[in-house]
Length: 196
Image 1 (cartoon, one colour):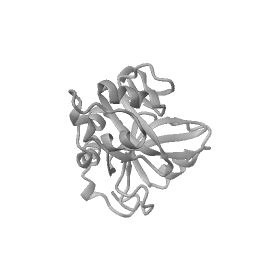
Image 2: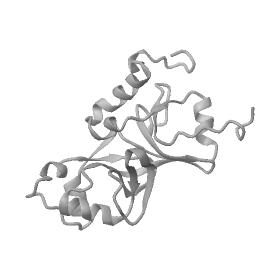
Image 3: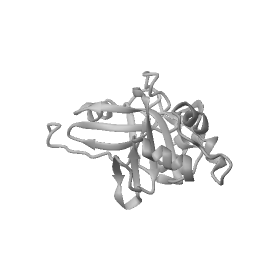
Image 4: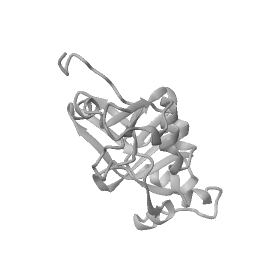
């Protein structure tokens, strides 16, 4: 069967890096796929916090952040390494969708979007909205057919995403929680593809 006749769409899926993944950008990562179509795929790694918090990022990009208000805790949220593409650019995975300048609607019925325009950061800094956010620097990208090829090589496991894992669990629990959606313990996965 040719790749063109077997169309899969992994938008709103988690990609779990297999233990044999040697690429340091993706080893032991959990990636949320925001868009997947015939042109390729775009995702954000959601379990790799950087040594940088939201308040510090806002200070660096000259956006006021009102830490005296109710969203003080938000300032301590970590910024994530989202992937090796455009690591100097911020991406906000969020719910609800809201009305920002440029939002990729990931999952309409779950109100999840990915926004990379400055206006969402201004909104977060001013009033803590949207409330559910994951801010990353960079993203993961795949060219046409590349992700499908990597899946065929057993580089990844995929499972439909659960927004609670993204927005409600601490970073260190996300990979394990995604594995549990499949009923698998990461420690039991074999390093040899196809023998999990």
